[in-house]
Length: 527
Image 1 (cartoon, rainbow, N blue to C red):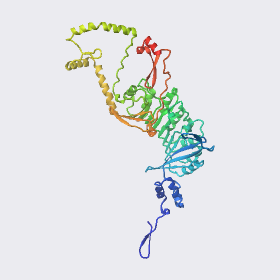
Image 2 (cartoon, helix red, strand yellow):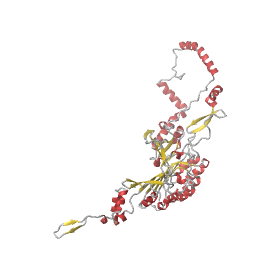
Image 3 (cartoon, helix red, strand yellow):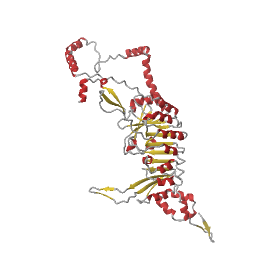
Image 4 (cartoon, rainbow, N blue to C red):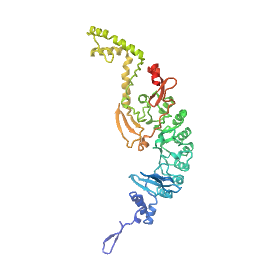
């Protein structure tokens, strides 16, 4: 504090004004003040006007609400329209986050045609911006010039902005300026809409021209809810292979006929340690062993985390036990709400499927019933004669259980004569031991929208399993997966007298004869 000495020797303190404070102190004080109060503080004097020309906030999030010409308000009795102008009016909601304290402030523009001009003048105050989040493609190409000046942005999030990537898009200039930011480290194109996971409703395309605009050293690259052509992926693999570590393309769509070219392009990204693959590139069918190109991809990349879609639980468990690379520590398994995998059976040998009994016709059933009734008397006589040598049977007859001594002798004899049969329990225990040594964590992500995200944690064979649901809050970490591959078969009876059965999410036809059906039963099914 400044002070002065009078004639009597009394020291008088002078009051400190805002002009005496350094610019850095004024900016630090402004971080504790809401945005509207900052404008009032800036208008006090010339010194504060210069000091608060730029704000210290590092993250902003922009949303909008459009008010078009045909806005309708419905009540319980009637509905009417507001007389609006032809030009749309919008109000922008801006969320400001100050780092490192994490204080959050919100500001909203008025519903005027000049709200875009107000927002542009407001954005000029963020000279040290680190993160930018845009919702619902609310900004147009008129913001491209000011956003291109934010050279310090490291994280770019685009939520539900698929309209930017459509062919007939009027904001091509804006998305090109955003993708060409030089210091981007995370490019997150996220989607929380319901049609975003459907290939039929996807009109957004991440084109090759947009991929060529990316020149920043991106480490975290996520694309959700759009088509990813092969040429675009080849450009991304060529430009981002030295830097990218997380690649999440699980909710992208492409041509399945070119999946081998997709896999070869992914092999160029030698630094990727976290990968999400869409179903058209990789999925497990009826065999737990993937093809050679997929195995080469898994062995060439330093993968520590992997995500794909769940189809069949038994195939999934055998893939984890035998084919999953030992370096993978985190698995993200996406599944339908009706197909929750039971991880309690992981590490156990699958039970042999019982052969279906052949179903006989009505006439054969009647003959069997008559013969069984005629043999009741003979069975009673035989039971009386053999009362001393009866054997216990379960469900129609089974071998007699020996005592402990005889069973151990028999087991020792079988071990000498049949050494191969003794290797099966060791093989089973080896599977459990490898899973215990791996310290694997599995996220079972249910594809069902819920208001609250529930977490259930279980442990099976020293494998941590976290059951969770797909949510907007966790999409940046867990990612999102596209819909199942559509089967070319029809869910109905065909001319070849086949029945369509579902195994996982894949459909395969099997003949009715293998199920034991005969002609009269088939006729009943057709009716």
